[in-house]
Amino acid sequence: MIPRYSRPEMVQIWSPATKFRIWYEIEAHACDAMADLAVIPRENAEAVWKARDTEFDVARIDEIEAVTKHDVIAFLTHLAEIIGNDEARFVHQGMTSSDVLDTCFNVQLVRASDILIADIEALLAALKRRALEHKMTVRIGRSHGIHAEPTTMGLTFARFYAEMDRNLTRLKTARAEIATGAISGAVGTFANIDPKVEEHVCAKLGLEPEPISTQVIPRDRHAAFFAALGVVGSSIENIATEIRHMQRTEVLEAEEFFSKGQKGSSAMPHKRNPVLSENLTGLARLVRMSVVPAMENVALWHERDISHSSVERNIGPDTTIILDFALARLTGLVDKLVIYPDNMLANMNKFRGLVMSQRVLLALTQAGVSREDAYKLVQRNAMKVWQQGKDFMSELLADTDVTAALSEAEIRDKFDTAYHTKHVDTIFARVFGES
Image (tube, rainbow, N blue to C red; front, side, top):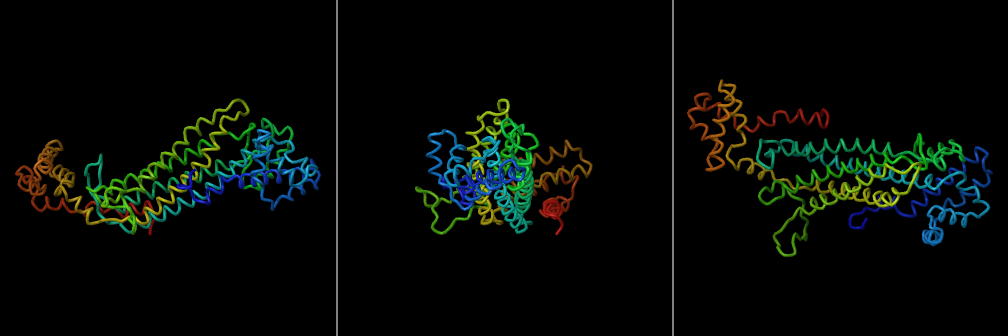
């Protein structure tokens, strides 16, 4: 992934140096286990650890691979150059390349998961803080982009919090699913390596042994992992879309923080654009782009093929790096989002009480008017607001069919905004727990 959308800690996980370090640890731990089983001499296993503090020469490994056309063999050749050919003769005993590649890939995905989990936890903290801050900040709710009934900005943040909290659970589940390793040899039968080696290596790397592998770890695990990342990406876009709407000039209920010296347009100096949330919308598309290839990687020929390999070399680093960046960007956006309560009230009152139509409808039915007739009474007055700019309450008070069923006081009572916020505490308790 390009540096513009990358953060160093996640990038480091996918660096060649980190990859070769994990490969080395897999091989060294496997040698320890085989020495414990008296399969190889103890001194040879100990000799492998001479490279413990070595920084592997990535350029040299690439040079060897240019000849061998095999990345794992290139690494093993370089390792032998460091510790000596005789000392290295039992390295990779009974193993196949996928034992190293797949186990390493899952270690990297687990480490990436830990960063992403921390990212979501930081986002949740920001969403909760803003939700509590604007718990009772009234704004109009919208359905189909049209004014519906009053809600609060706090409920909007709480809704996003609950969604991201579900994503946190999904990501933890995905992490657990991907945290397996396989050191089972060609086609996964353990014919040339004891299962205890796999158990030892996995324990050292914080993984669980894959219950049954072929020559590869089953790719349904990876499909589930990237699907979970795709859902997180969609949730990011969900929040970003709401912010983009709120920042529209005609709405302006909130806007991204605009820093001193920031420029919105090369042509129009007045512009303050929602560039961060628009950027997040694009990044979410890239995250979801990995889901279908990961699903298609599940179907491999027999005990293995490498049709999945080129896919994973791209979607592993790219998707986790993008998502890490996007979550951090969204957290900063939410944390600094500028809220305009006065504009929210102005927008809600733009159509002069029209959004209270359901309360009047229900009151009429409770007063004995049929629902069909009550709907017609309310709608005919509501249309005057839409079409003629009338005041909804005034039209209702002037409608003798309405006043025949409801008193003036009863009609006016139906325009009390507090009616719509009476259960906010209940919802907050469900989302955040009892305070």
